Image (cartoon, rainbow, N blue to C red; front, side, top):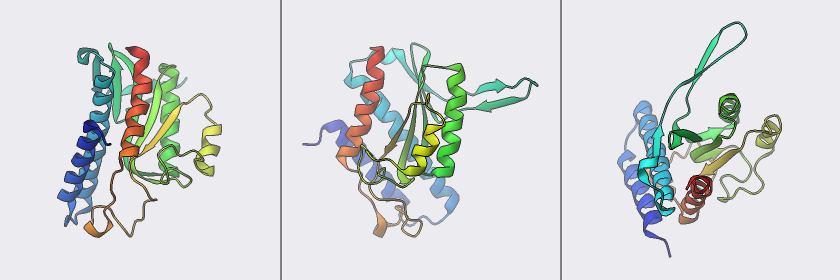
Length: 207
């Protein structure tokens, strides 16, 4: 039986996808999908913290920019989409995407590696609607086999703990966009629950 919080997240996704039906302007669609993924992510984090009986006053979700410099004084600023703070301490950094392919993944893991130099205990997550990474990300929530490309990239960053959460089944097909009614994809309860369980497992360390 699907619990109420899972069902609420699925209904929210369905309602927002339905609003996109008939929309043709690419910029609008990208913004709508980006907002959808970020909102689902934030709602899941808050739900996971609530399920752990965490004090909501201790939790904050932000998007701060952190700066890094090299020996010559060159500056690089970066910020991932959702930053989870417990008691003001940065605990989870999340990149939210409508979909990801390997080039995007490489940028995300490099940025994560750089952030880790300032926050060595930080956990990282790629939170996406669909996957173009290959392997098992679009086949099952636990993605036990992963993909060869991701495994190779990860091997160069062994210190970075980057969880990949994919909300929809099936590899992304550019010719079958999910905002078109005929290519709609359902968000399954097991994927929602996998994501909630991931956030609970990380956040439980700070209860």
